[in-house]
Length: 71
Image (cartoon, rainbow, N blue to C red; front, side, top):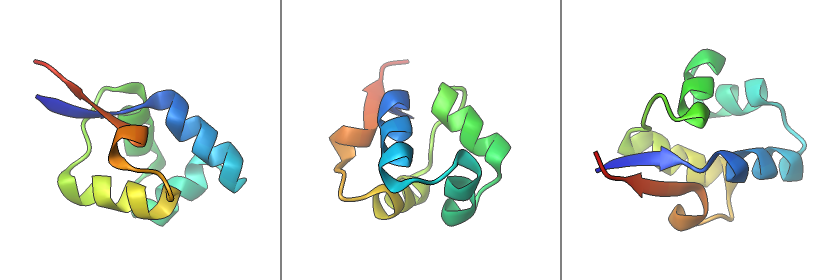
């Protein structure tokens, strides 16, 4: 199984925090291009990066931001 970001949840969190996709990438310590791939579902975030997403976009839980995709 792969862990994927819930695209809508990311956009909603960005609106709530009043930050851009580029600012989120900066806070996560990744490139904006890599963040775009994560949001669009082309890449899966590592366990470490999932923790960073939860820290930066909190107070959301795992199920709010991610879903499991069967391969």
